[in-house]
Amino acid sequence: MIPFLAEAPPGFHTLSPVCGGHPYANLIALKFYYCDLTLDTLANTALAVAATLLIIFFAVRRLSAGIPGKLQMVLEFLLFYARGLIRESVAEDADFIIPIAATIGLYILIANWLDFLPISGVRLHPANSDLNQTAAMAIVVFLVVQWYSIRVLGFAGYLRRFTKPFEMALPVRIAFIPLNIIEELVKPVTLSLRLFGNIFAGLLMVYLLGLWFSAGVNSGGIAGVIFVPASTVGLIVWKAFDVFFVGTIQAFIFMLLTIIYFGMAREGLEEEHGHGGQKAATTH
Image 1 (tube, rainbow, N blue to C red):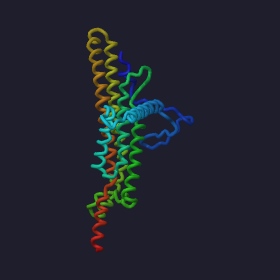
Image 2: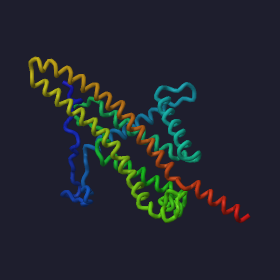
Image 3: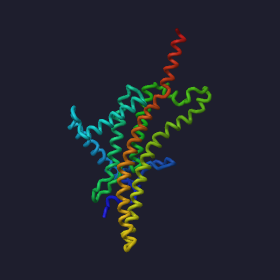
Image 4: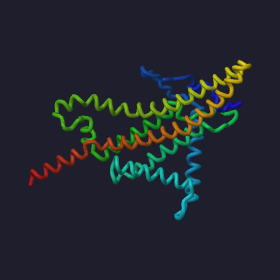
């Protein structure tokens, strides 16, 4: 009746070999297949990218200096909100982060919302329900944040970041170095798993409700009369809630954490300036 809501079991992304066989690197905790592609995820990612670009180009062509349209108002709100967060959490001169954060937020939002489209014959699932996708975005954010930290603090200041807390004695700060390194390396892991986990859980819930619907159809009789309407309504309501509410919240959280990580990349900058000011005062 509503096949696009009751999807196939989530979590199965078939690997398609590119260079023959399934070569992988055994990383103990997981296997890294370096010569395989998940074509279904790539197709859904390409669709989400195309939709994002289409919306952006459409909005650019309809830009108005007067009374803006609804789409322009939404995109301007996203940009101004991201700019406010960046200037409050990072720095006044860090506007280069706006394209990164706003693009990530908009892309994730559209990729999540596409899950509601009833495209018959196509297994359309959110690209972010594949950990490969969310991990790739998290790694890109992580690398750009490290570059920004080195650029702002210098290499010596960047290394000094890992000796927090700065107000403690040097031996204590040295003892904290392993913990600070682990904290930094865990950021892309938690960033990717948070988005993946929430989107995957939504798909799993839809699948379970779909099984309930199928059970009601197959049971027939009074049970079928009760189960079919209840499960149908449950599917529609949950799908709408999961796609439009949870999907929006997760896009916002990913964008927000990206901005926060840029702010954390500046840790120790004020301390360095304070030391510089004290040295100057002592010299005079």
